[in-house]
Length: 365
Image (cartoon, rainbow, N blue to C red; front, side, top):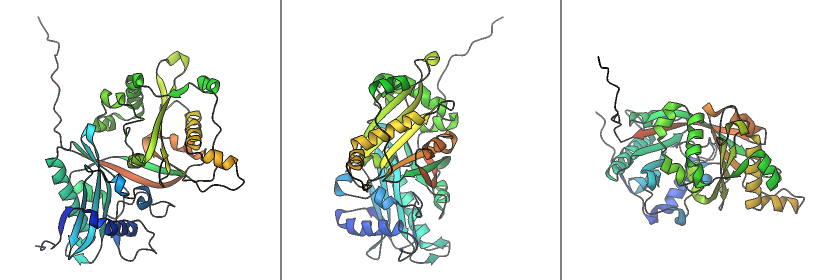
């Protein structure tokens, strides 16, 4: 039987930040830049022009007191980290980062695999004590990521494509009020909660809808304020100003919604964010172009491009599309996005589902 490793998992301290930043940088550098073997969630893939280190970097202001950050310490050095984002209204945790340095092998596999196993084990135990109802994670299907979480009871329920629109491309022009009226595009309002829930249910397979478990109260909070609907890139909305828009259906299906757009205008170095939910029979191109126009206007990048002949560096725009939402990915590619990664979505639910009591008709003679 393998002897337990001498290291320990503990909460991170402010004095660990320099070492954590270096470990995160190692984890998401390209293969040539890595000074040692490191395992991570691989979101997005390291071949892309971005990395998790640039997307989810750790400024002190973003480390909120209720967001757990665990480290694995061995021989006075940090060999692994697990970073979690909490969603208080829904009692959910999202594993944002899970990195480990491979310093050797054991009888049952790599040392990094053992470190990450213990980190996940610890955060699940701690989350259970804090009343967490669901644990979420998105990861690339490589380096044993999916197997690691399934060993801890996570269920794999979806795949997501990560698309990126590089900076320097022209932004669509802002539509006038009359044009938006003809396109039936308007800002989201709290009264849209019921129709938004119906749109989500129409665009989402029933098993996924049951697992994610959005309630009317979640939609009433406004998807421009709360970080729903969930995607693999939702954590970057912490660093962005969010807005949401809806597009109405044709007159014969009023007042139903045909599509929903959530966007985040980055306040830091992270790219801007765009998420679309659309009915399968609806072309969301006009809504996507409106979202890009709003991002360009709010970030002042469109104005900067018009005032100079040189292409501004900008931040680009990142979007997530689930595989069952096709052809949304093609609509995004038509406006300049390109695929950079595909990730798996996994969830572990700690609540026990029970059937709700209901009355049944009785047969009488």
